[in-house]
Amino acid sequence: MNAPAKVNAERSIAFAEHAAAFHNRFELAVPVLPGFSHLALLAYIEPFRIANTVLRLPLFRWRIVGLNSRPVEGARGLAISVEATVDELASSSEDRKIRQLVVVAGEPIEGQLTPQLSGFRLMARRGVSMCAVGTATWLFAQTGLLSGTRCTIHWSRLAAFSEVFRKPAIRETLFVKDGQYSTCAGELAAFDLAVDLIADHAGGAIAQEVCRHAIVDGQRPRSNRQTAPSGISYSNVSHTLTSATWSANSDVLYRTFDEPGTRRRTAVIECTPSLGGDVKRASKRHCCNQRSPRG
Image (tube, rainbow, N blue to C red; front, side, top):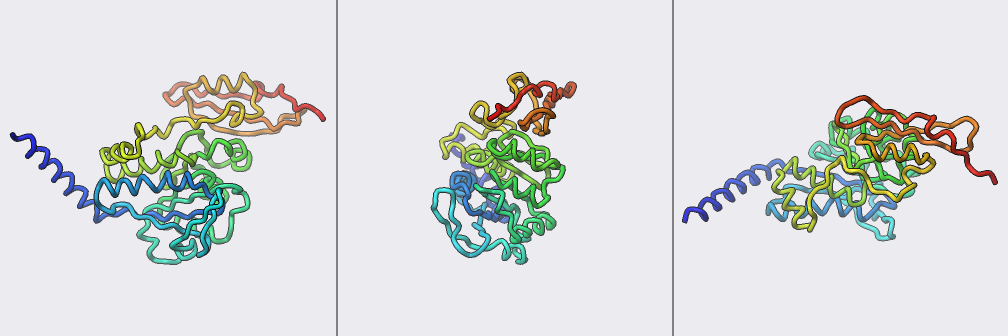
């Protein structure tokens, strides 16, 4: 007879906690850049919508932001409207209410660094949490935001990123949180990053309920490796080195060098065991015998 009363009491307590959280709304600004991934954008935003539905409170709010006021066309040719511009966001006092800036980019990424993106540095100086989804990590590195920061990017860009940018410490994981900065591999990994934020702000039970509504087994750990077709993310690396890398329980850092006498760019991978022990380093001699075919 007492069970229903106990359940109702627990629900009342939970509702009171969520009502208190309502006064601590989490505001997100989501700049989207031309060629952005619709999959990554929706994978990041939808968990917050589901969380609001579960809570029956608008705890999470977001605004879509563009480089200008025109609709932004994504990778599939579908355009979405924006509620503000990057310049408006950076110059407005309302940006102090923003808890996180989430940049969603796509391809091609190299030519998307524009003067408007200097607003990212301004907001970072104001203490706003900065998040790069997918190839947006490239832009963060270009603007100097990731110096000495652990980060990740989509596996298709890992080798190129490590060749161009030396200061960030790149990882081949789903997402990385390092202080003020979060970076994500993009696509469906954006869902895992969003659920992680929901767990931090609304509690693990709400995060689990979001996964249940999305018909997902649960949030994947941030340390999970990205999946990639064999030979792509480790292109131009010898079989011996690749096997050693995959067999190590480690964090993976990518570095590149020009091997004298070869025409091929070769990647060096440093393997640092996550559970302690000596650092194992894959050196040049493991992969210096490869030569590109002539002709």
